[in-house]
Length: 465
Ligand code: FES
Ligand SMILES: [Fe+2]
Image (cartoon, rainbow, N blue to C red; front, side):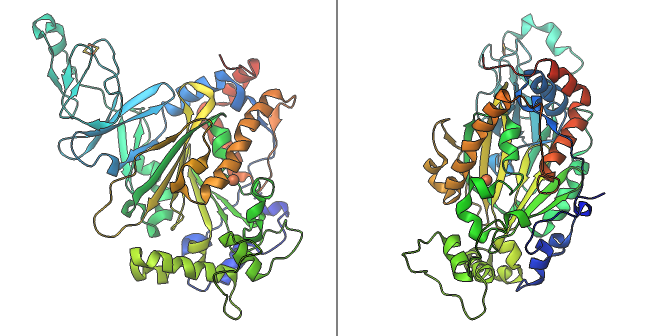
């Protein structure tokens, strides 16, 4: 049984019907539909509140799964490196002498000091404690007072830095700590096929903002995996967002929610005119003049798409004429399990959500804007870190989205608190609209194991130390 076979769907136009009225040819990838009914049971709240569950996630998920570490452009030259961290794990992701990328656990083989404290450029990997050094490729290069370590150089492995698996796709660098993990190509192929027409490799990091969120990483992530919350959280965008008319598709290790723009929410108690939709889209007050006028019969959706084409034309050229209104107007929000969220077309957004160190009650949310460019690739924006009490609006580079993120963030810490206070053992999900959230939990069950829920149930809430 699929979700749509349950018979329930939102009133208003379906996404596929909306595509029929597009002023340009619609790419095949948007014509795909893959609804999945994954059950209607409650999901245990302890997935968000239990430290035991978090520890099992570290052991069974983060130590084994392919995960987005950085962009290739963050480490363009040999010796450039970043430090990628997940829970207590830390990796050096290094551009090596021959231009390939390697990842090493960030720990000295002598007495274990972390080898790199932060990103940078180096000619060797030298430990700051006693000075053991390795080449960029991980071969042992120097042992101070080597006469005292005859047992080191004679080791079968030559005392090389151990390596983690590395894979690249569209300028993204992924790492996997598990030597026995399934090949990267297998992991990425489904998503890569969908992004064939939207070449994210040919983009640069125009903005990168990170913020600590006072909620489990899944609470933060799931706030972006459905459009159902828009009616209560972002009511100002309802006149032009088909929130409950979103199309939700689930494949194996990736899923998407497509939320149409330039079409009104069926939850509105009134029907906005095309002008009123335009006004809401551009955030123009009722006592101000609308700076654009719609031609006869033109919809706000088509006019918004036409304006977006002209915005991108100076950078991407006439390729914009081959792009549909849908690609210009809709939120094409993909998720690759467990925590990577690239958006299609020119939405530019990529999200990543991670636990904040070893704390299961806080997380790090990152927003990247991946933008097209002309000429030489601009340097990637450095990461702008917002303090835990700082609003997203302090990151001017996020533009209008910052306001929306503040509304989302306000929920997250309150979801964490509510889940710790509730007497109800699980959360309840909508069958269709929240099926991407349920899919994330199905994947989690696969990776972390059903026994993890049983273990977590024994220690349901552990509060901050
Ligand atoms: S701990 Fe690194 S050289 Fe001693
Ligand atoms: Fe939101």
